[in-house]
Image 1 (cartoon, rainbow, N blue to C red):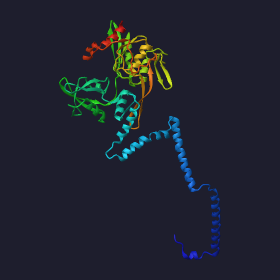
Image 2 (cartoon, rainbow, N blue to C red; image 1 turned 120 degrees about the vertical axis):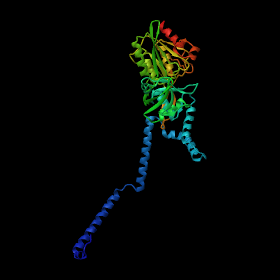
Image 3 (tube, rainbow, N blue to C red; image 1 turned 90 degrees about the vertical axis):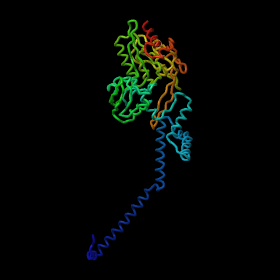
Image 4 (cartoon, helix red, strand yellow; image 1 turned 30 degrees about the horizontal axis):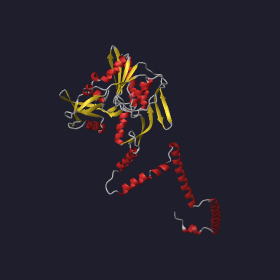
Length: 431
């Protein structure tokens, strides 16, 4: 906005004087405020910056101090300890003349650390192996619920097991079906693993299996869903007018206890007079799973096993009201390890049951797993376990109350009629 010149010229001297006085008064007021503020300014700019840096550093140290209190680790010390590893990594990455796989370098460093422990059961698993292990030990996975294998004579892919109530079971897939195609693609000459990998990684909600059954080819559509692996099986064996229960456990997974208890209750409804528990070739599994199964049989207060670490021994006792009093025989062999040996020794020493077969594997240590940031996993030994009577069976195994070697006839034709170890167990209960 422009002010006209004649208006400016009409401003009298008095007005100009008033304005001049106001300006001088304002200057004096501003100077006093500046002096006042100057008195209040305790730190220079450099000093303020220094305080800020110190505060940030203190917060950083306090943060790591809290972590140290929580975990018991001195991370500044850990960083110093690992400097050699870090220096080596960057020396290679920055200077190596060829192409490098950085993930492989890190995996190699972890594997080297694990192997230097010198313990067979302390191990490292890459991401894919860790996923597979997790599916196995948890007892469930996303799939169609069947097992396939290559026949040795013609390498054809055959269905060898269909899980009960699984998608394959509901779709009508049967044991003995020969799979020739998956989603229209031929799998002749390929391995059973190729089919498993396709189903697992296809990202589809269903697959079409082309199978040959009784000389006829047919397509079977199978939906993918969460499948529970059946690690427990059962049956009734009749001997001398007695019903004897049989339960086989192939792995102590997170769902094995639930499966075991369901099978046991079904058998007990049939008024069994005794029970055979078969853990032959069972390599072990979760400690909690075998503990829960033992709790079903032992009297309250009976020792299931003992754990020992650097702090001493702790006895794990039955704390439940559940118990049984019928005869129990546990079947073991050289492939029975860890949790299987806990079950066998617990029934033998705290239930006064029998153990039939051959000496077990002899694994008397307990491991924990830790999932790493990239999905890989380490497994490391934390404790050793002892039998209820305090026996350390590591590299020794559980000794059967009745040693029975498996007959060659069973090895040649593995069916129940030829299983002499099983029949010895049945006879002990029936007598």
